Image 1 (cartoon, rainbow, N blue to C red):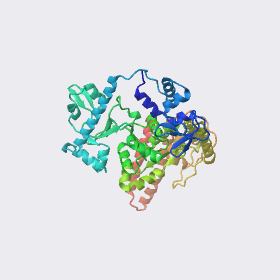
Image 2: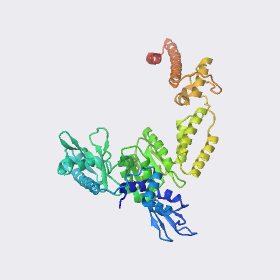
Image 3: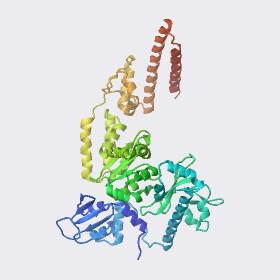
Length: 537
């Protein structure tokens, strides 16, 4: 009998939550780790039908019915296998593959891939403890990895020579290339990973499907990963998930960090539920895989600009997966550190404080809106509202979507007000600008709120009332910014002229201020150069 490719049905199970599939036909209520409802296969008033999100199956304690998303769809919809798969593929947004039996040659080839990667891993492990691997061993132990950790995660070393190409010289070259370990060059096969600290990459079944290699000589990129193969797809592979699945179930959440070393250190220091994306930005496939285990996710990224950007992307991607039972949070490691460093310096208690202090999704989106837009101006408020509306629209649960809208509507009413900036006390009393300049600045402030955020401190020193209408000057953002910068340079030059005049008076009185006057002259030259550059541009 013809069957669908097992990889396709496995991917269906990975992408689709059994809770979401069952909820289409059975109302469910969460109790503990499971969801409960009245069984659709026999009449009952007391719920005995249990759905386990993490394991991906349902079981009725009344009639004994048991199965997964495929059997549930077949039985409740009175469908044949292919019909059920087609419906589920539509829900998952996947294209149906050709309906044909698996080729025994394909099965044999896949098995040979696993045999190659398994043997390669053993060789890398062996080389790590030989003289050639001394630098790699020193590095990984210096990062706090114990012998037990090295053994558990099967960390190794790929030497500079063609270890794998030579070891598998008699193997089928096509199979060796297909694993991503070797490539074919002008002079024969050569290893893809050379002089690298090696981290095996496991699929959820614990099979080694790829590798990540770290450079040891300071060269960039620091990490290279196996390119996508039949067995391995970076966009869908979550590093450490094979080790973390049971811990995610027990903790009732997953923690997502930025890199594999952070993930390993977190798992080894009391946070077994930690995983990481692999060599690529977080994707919908990563979130789908995590949501199969649990929809409670804490993203823990570095507190720098890149980490903030990654968190914003994660928030946007996770929105379609949010349910009324979800608890999505965002934690940041500040001070230029990462989780690995926090664990070394502060221990697990310091890391736990960071995780426990994470910001929930609702607050995080609100903070993003207020940070990225000038919500004290009408234009900025409009931009922020569009951002929030676009994110909320991704939520599939209509009731939850309305709850988000209601929450943000309340916050907007209570926290946003029209733009006004308190005048700051400044040591230099700048002269008032003329009406033409004032009108131009009012136009710029009301038209380009991003420039207000960039130059707000300077604009506040001008003592201008920015409220009220302004003429439409039809000025683009580049021209507007050049205008503000030019005015800022002008005002700074006026300050320098005033300071120099004051020092000249002091010098006539006998004070030794020549160095200060020289410094002012140098600053004035710099200002003139910048002013000339603005004219040239």
